[in-house]
Image 1 (cartoon, helix red, strand yellow):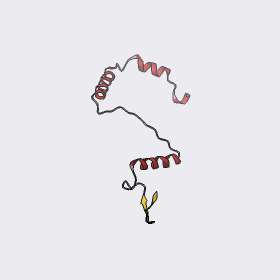
Image 2 (tube, one colour):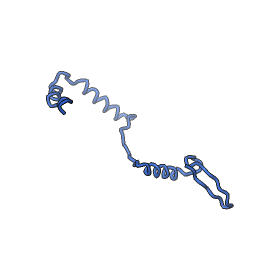
Image 3 (cartoon, rainbow, N blue to C red):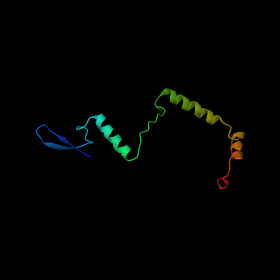
Image 4 (tube, rainbow, N blue to C red):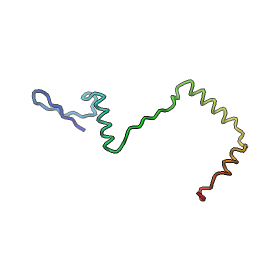
Length: 90
């Protein structure tokens, strides 16, 4: 997308809107969001765990240990299979 810039002396300059030198960050972001909304998109903010933290590593380790200790021949899997319908019956 191009943008025309007019100077006080009447001269015009055509610039590319994605060029970081011609637009402020706020203007670029605003223009990008406007174009995306015109295309039928909407912004979505997603928060995810920070996998770089010590708390995340400790919780991942704790959960992995619990999974490793599970009795694989327990009644849990039998229960799941008992209440699950085969794909053909669904």
